[in-house]
Length: 456
Length: 95
Image 1: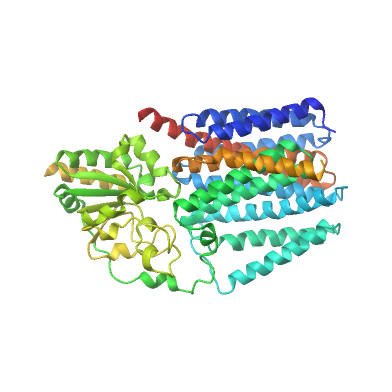
Image 2: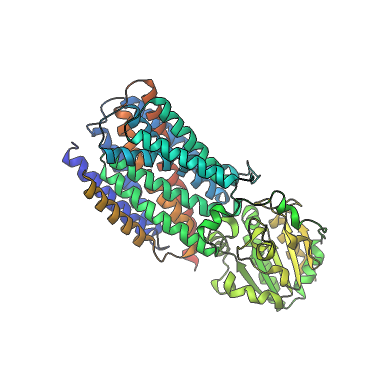
């Protein structure tokens, strides 16, 4: 039995964490929220050293905490803002893996657990393991280590068979057959399942998938909390499970796609169909001509994407907008819900550069205006302006709402090179008749455009 | 804990989690995902309990990995959330 004072600290920690999460859902109180939750977590961790079941291996525990903390601290501090989504995936995978490892230790100990605890323990192990390997794949994809979508015929059936096998194994283990070989096979197959589930999903969908795995990790943590009889773990885990599920739903809604479409859209896709949009050549333009085109336009819409974030070009772009405004050009910004791979990413960067909110528009508010726009300037965005999403049913991003840049009179696309975008999909916009490519780093290009406009 | 009590805890926690996130602006989706990622780092206390009673090198090894990963979840989750929300503060102050 846990001493009352430890139980009391856990109780308060669970409450503060929920309140902290609540505070994080408003921009004004968000920082206070994470700070409170951090204090609660630190307190809960420290008192656990007095938990009666933490009977030995104290040196190992301290070493593991120290090592894990240092590695995560350094990587978390160093990572560029643009790489945040994959770091979240990585740390989330760690949590899922931890939940699964807890289950593994409990199973290997052949301890006395109630049937319900065994069932939840095994269920949590499966969910945690899938979240672990799935998150690592998501990390590798976002990091650019895995560009291929890796789809093949019968993938869906293979996954289903695999899942059924894992569940059967899990049921056998939960009924008390806890031979180590069975347990190893169970975990190995669950790892494989997480990998197979994630490899066919395109990079543009990754934030949604990471959010889903985040919810799954929460669920796994909640289940293992029941096994270990730590209510704070149950509560915090399930709160994250529910909040994460809702968040996943909200993100999928922002892309106007049901979650099932995000997860399974790739399955059964015809081999090689994604290359269909190829053909045509990209036509380059130099910064001087692009500057002239924009300076003499009436209406310009700027579509920022990941490329602007990478190059930190937002300040230069805003300077350019100021010059264009002086010449009487009406400039607005169009932000796709998932531009930059992190919802809200572009809003943050533009706000940082001082761009007022009233010239920034959401997809629904601005899409009709492209047809009457003289120049659409795309800065390092790709999938969110790909017309294939509208009409090419074989495209992995088919169905995602896009900004209709291809309907504007002229489109200028700032891009670092000629390669395909993040998701590896060809973009028909780039070879369009009224599209000109402006190659280079977004910040340098913006500088050239500024000089170009000034020189007129 | 008996099954019914557990079910009540799960049910109430799920409702709380749902309510806490409902009606959140799209700008905060990623920080919230990151923040909730930090919250499930509470798995650390479970990992400590698991390693604390592990015996034999296999259990100790798995327990060690569990604590290591859980600690990385906690610290990494906190650091990236904090950094992301820092950006929001600067944008909020300007608007």
